[in-house]
Image (cartoon, rainbow, N blue to C red; front, side):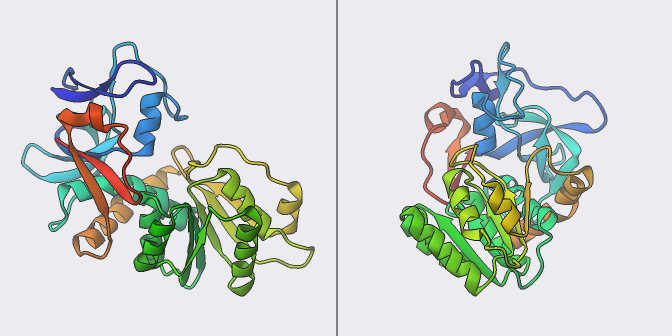
Length: 323
């Protein structure tokens, strides 16, 4: 079969012939893959930088962790891969498979799950979002951030504040449901004061952070209390596009009612992952099929994977490999 194969750490995948995988037990099934989204997770695994990577490059490996494909009877499904999924064939888990509704394109369906997991899991399980709450999304101009805005609104958020560096894209987020924007290209003092004012006028309940790094330090600084009672804030780290480490003052932690947690591979419980596949993804696929989620993608053929792997995709779009 043809596949996107990584042979050496740090190198981009090659369009190459690779052995078709074989299922090993009754919970595994072979599907014909039709579309796979390229995510930061996939790029991190391919480069060996992601914490879940085992760095096995000896015989090469197929990249891709999930995808949309066809069962033998033609049924269209989304599934998590056991073998790499950017290939003509892949082994997937039967219990991590979702039937797709009519009305949703194969490529759109492939683009959604990573972003849905990166937003809905944090909102539903790490923060327990309630209708009427105020949500701050740090790094909302990316694909997952834009999905997070729409899911937060779907879950009942009354007010959504978004941050990012691309001013044009930030303005477009108002059409997706954002209520206020904070540009991270401003001076630090201006950003902190703007966030303080927002928090004072309408207390922020939830922060979903896709950036971490210096922007997170500014957000924590804006929350710092002065010794009086403070509003409880649930802060969830989902990504670290702006840096993996920060400096966090112990004084900030002591001065504010803050719940700090992370949402990602290894942090979710078995029950939460089960609900992702049985409830959350089916609901989001249906919303997309009904035109209630706005999703932007850019498609590329598997044969062009080498020249397209490092292509810079515009803010808010996801690159989808079609097979």
